[in-house]
Structures are given as C-alpha cells and as structure tokens.
Length: 189
Image 1 (cartoon, rainbow, N blue to C red):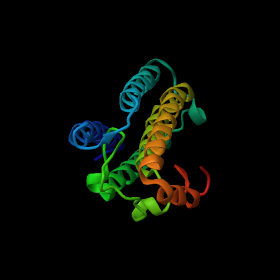
Image 2: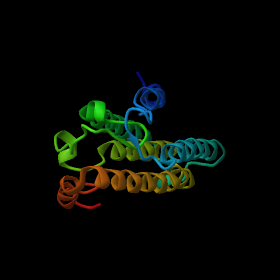
Image 3: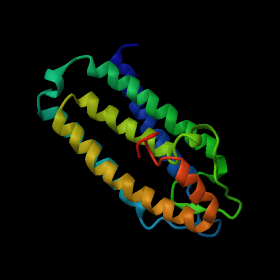
Image 4: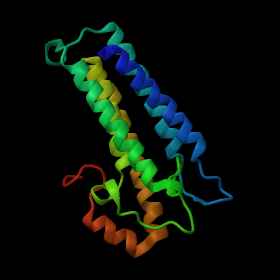
C-alpha cells in the first residue's frame, strides 16, 4: 500500500468514525445534564469549513511548506495515525462517560487512568493532531493555517464549556485533578 492510498484510507476512516461517534454517543437531555452551549455544532461547522478550505487551497496553490518537501506526506500519515490512536483510545477509555455533546451523567467520575493521567482532554489532543496531519499533507502554509487556526479556536471554546460543566458537576475532585494535569499538551497547556 502506498502513502497516498494509506492517507486516503485513514482520512476517510477518521471522517466515518467522527460521524459514528457523534451519532452513537450523543447524550439526550432525558439521560444526562446536557451543557453543550452549541459547542458541538460550532466545532462541526468549523472543522468541515476548515478542512474544505484547506483542501481547496491545496488544489489551487503550490506546495510551499519547506520548499514542497515530499517527506511531509509520509510524516502526515504518521501524525494522522497517532492522532487517530490517541482520539480513539481516549474515547474508549471513557466508555459510557464519553458524550459527543458536553453532558454530565449522575454516575460520572473523574477519570485518571490511561491518557487521562497525562492530559485532561486527550480526545481533543488526538483531534488536533489529526488536523495538523491534514495541514502537513497539504504542504502549503496557508492550508495549514486555514485548517489549524479556526479549529483550535473552536476546540478551546469547547474545552472552556466542558471544563465549566465538569467543575460544576464534579466540584473539588475535578478542581484537584485540574491542578495536577494539563488541559491539552503534557507539561505545557
């Protein structure tokens, strides 16, 4: 299997998995305390628009990232695979506590196992790595910015909404966890 085929396969696997996760894990108002504040819709709109914009720019503009370096394509496949692995591992670790929309269940507790020992939002870290991979695959700085900057802003809003809901629902336990664990990037943020 060549790099281009592997990229295509992983990219569409990611897209299909995001749709499946959004449908299968969405919490209804009757089964949990939904506190989403529109963040799921905002995130979807921004991701779709940014990926579309990135691909459009990639199609019409020359590769100018590191002089169009061809090594970026296999590197992007590696970053995409890592992002998928991190995102899926985080979702599986949370199990029934994971929700596509921001919602807190009565039985929910702070998870401190697996990737959650390292960062509070590993599924978003995985998603950011996937978006970095898409930008790298374009080999164009403008495409990279278009796919990464708006989605990062939308993710930061989503994290803000989610942390407010978790702080309110889980109180001191989540506050203590927040003091010792970074949000998104281990040891940095």
